[in-house]
Image 1 (cartoon, rainbow, N blue to C red):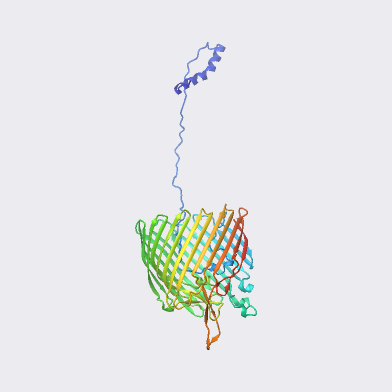
Image 2: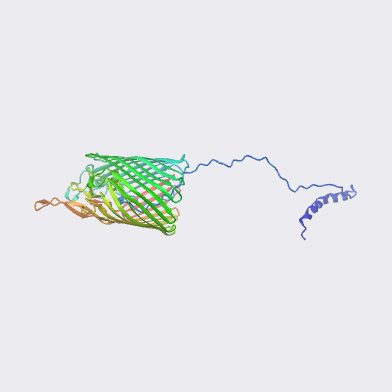
Length: 566
């Protein structure tokens, strides 16, 4: 039987008094009488403490605003990257996914055939809400190469220092990049030489320095967004040529309302170039635009005004191009189509040209490219999770678009050559990228460039087709495997003959370059918490192809080394 809770308390009192009653009856001292007593039971008690002063407003330091920049899937021009010049000694051109570092800093070192040495250091402060700073060092050298051993050796060394501070309403930062590169003009004809030329007579050395100061606002929701920078670039070679470039850039936008904003972008460059002559090359370009978003439609209307001091080929110095872009979201976060009209003056410098082709002859006439008007159409899409597909077609008219052709005076060196009239260009770009949880990464990129030249025999050393197929696999952050297969279609260079035909000297002979097919593999294995080993196999097909006429690259080569995280 279960008793009600109201009756449990009296019962407990009686049970507590029972032993006293039994003892009294046994001794007979009380005569068996229970004396009257009052028992007070306190069922609830509240301890009250004085109210403490509490401060809910804690000091809060806002971290720097993280802004996401849209991924650029197209290229304004088909460039010849420096790491394509000699892929048999380079790290894979597609940026590799590294094994997750333990602390963010690491040291790398490796050795390989052709007397190759590789070293890299990444030294940065740990995550901070107030500032970031660091050092990046890289060195890659080969004591010998594919032609006469030391005569085709090369080396590249770079040092970068950077720092940012996030105090206040803006981010302030600075960068300093220093570099030294050594190449040799080894594209000589070995069949006509009994002995190879001395290595020092082939020497070319580039020294580079670039400093930049910049400021941008931190609040991503501020109505006025800006990114402003000023810098100075210096370059010189082994032939007493030098280039000094003071430059500034501005990227800005002001929000007018929920659906509209005004954007103003600008660039300024003042170059002093010294070779056999001294040349000043001013450049300025501004693009104001009005941007409007209406539901799924995005519209930008503006104009690009550019001026350059270059005067070769009678190209206009002042240029005005439309800057119109229309985008429509067919399916949100799935499919966007766009089209537009554009154009602009593209700055060309010896600083950049010698990263594309280090075998330029002295006394080059450098000119900015007038690209436009251009017409383009394309789409960006994500048809499935972790999968993106993008494509773009561009038609343009280019004035003073540069090409590389072998020098008539010395075929081991290259001259910058320009079409006498505008060069018509069609560019078709496409890419497919699959990235699954940073574990599997597969991709394919392709660019087709069709050049129609008027006065040049061919589009010298600008291949029509470039493709890259790559993949990475990260196995439990323990083993990273990577592969890359890339191709270039054949392009053209020139040879020269001194034979006399009917009393006249036979001049230029257009010659095709090799078709490039290059396979690279990579493996990283973490053997300890802070220690891993890696191996790079480059140009595994062993083809000593000539990307630039007369310049074969290394055949099969291997790098093996160690990475230490700390």
